[in-house]
Image (tube, rainbow, N blue to C red; front, side, top):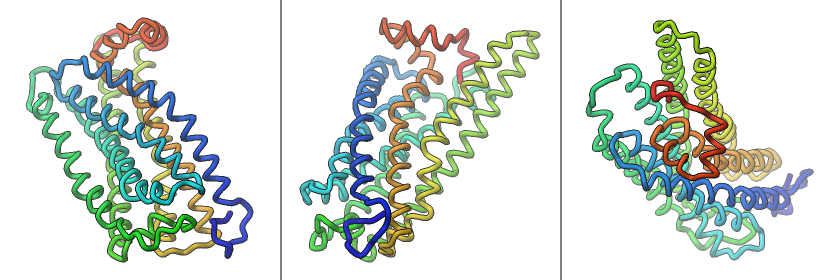
Length: 327
C-alpha cells in the first residue's frame, strides 16, 4: 500500500483505494440526497411543539449539509484534481463535513436523553420537553462545536506554500506546528464525544425498552409482538450508531499519531486505507438517519404516511400502535 511517494513499496496503492472511495461516495450521494431532501421537506411541515421536533429538525439540517459535502469529498479523492480544490476541501469542505457528523452524533445522544426522561417521568409539560429548551440546547451544540473544533481548524489550516498536488498528507501539509497539535487535540475531543454519546444512547434506550416492556406486563398484556417491536427498535438505533461510527473512531485512535507525526510508511498507508473506508461507512449514516426519524417521532410518521408511495411501504414494514411504544 503506497502513497504517491516513490519511497514506499507496498502491495496496494493509495491511488487505487482513493478511486474506489470516490466511486463509493458517488454511489452514496443519490440515495442520501433523495432521503434527506424528503426528510427536510417533512420536517419543514412539522409544527415545532416539543424539544424532540427541534432536535430532529437540527439533525435533518446537519445530515442534509453533510450530504452536500459528499461530492466535494469524492472530487478530492481524484489525484488529478485541481490543487486549489483539494486545498479548499482541506480547509473548509472536510471541516464542515466533520462538523455535521459530530452535530449529528451529539444530537442523537440528546434525543436519547429526551426520550429517556419522557418515559421515566411521563405526563406534564416540563422545561426539558419544551421547544424553547430544545432550541437552546441545539444552539449550544452548534456554537460549541463551531467554536471549539471547526473555526480554529479552518484558521490553522492555511499554509499554502507546501500544498503540492502529490503530497501524501495534503491537509497536514497545510497546517503549521500549532495546527498539527490542535488537530490531535480535536481528534481526542471528537473521540471522547463519540464514547460519551455511545454510553448515554445505549443506557437510555435499554432503560426505555425495559420500562415499556414492564408496562406491558403490569397491564396484563400478552402482546408479544409489541415487545418484539420495542426490542427491534432499540436494536436498530444502537446498531446504526455502532456500525456507522465505531469502526471509524477506533481506526482514528491509531491513525492520527502517524498522520500528525508525518510517519509516511506502509503502516501509515494501511491505517490511511482503513480510515478512508471506515469514514465512508460513517457517511452512510446520512441514509440511515431517516429510519431513525421514523422510529422516534410519531409526527414524522404521520407526515410520511401522507406521501402515498413511501407511506404505503413504511406502513406495511413498521406498524406502530401507540405513542407509548415509540422510542
